[in-house]
Image 1: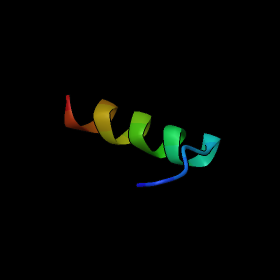
Image 2: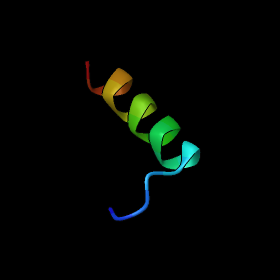
Image 3: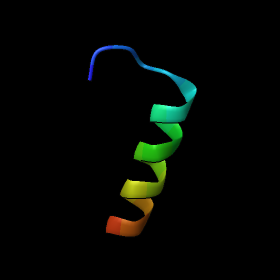
Amino acid sequence: MGLIMPLELGRLRIFLRENT
């Protein structure tokens, strides 16, 4: 992870949401 793009953030958000 180097550049924080909106797509990366959205992906992380979904990942965290699915993880919970």
